[in-house]
Image (cartoon, rainbow, N blue to C red; front, top):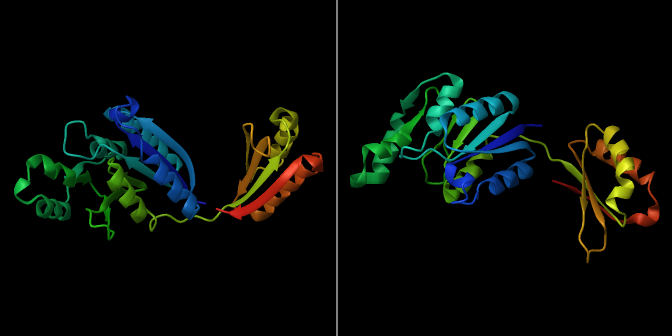
Length: 245
């Protein structure tokens, strides 16, 4: 299964001036196409922090999606930082220059042309969203931070990622989470292919704990569920729901 990481960049996010609106669409896309999103990092605009995070993620995950820091102003440092992370320079792409000139027309400024700068050797990922193409260097996809533009480019990313649907079983129990913790730990240890989550529920629901079993292997999921069902009282089971995600 393809693995992915997201890097949300911007001092405005960390300071609370602007709420993050981009991790949600990224999470939803990865779940939809069966990509295992394993990390979302929030960092500021400091070049050294972007360089370090990009290097960390690019070495560990199949796809890395960055958000923010690609505009025309002094605090838009993502492109230069990604270039530094891979030891390449920054170049101005002629196709992007043409698009930006056509888009801005008489309003064009030298600052606007900064948005045609890309890490040297990048490729352009075209789509039919009416926007300038997405830029990708190796396994790093460079997204705008503006939520409307990010959401549009997420759709273009769908064609770049290959995943596999996960099998999911939801088990709802009328048990205290602490009372089944030891048995759940044993099942988790015996089921390395399965991600098992345990979530206590609030009053007013018909169950007290919700347990999820998730894996690319249906057989592994079913085996883990059976292991737990063997060691709990059947009367504690409220319902079981199976699905693919």
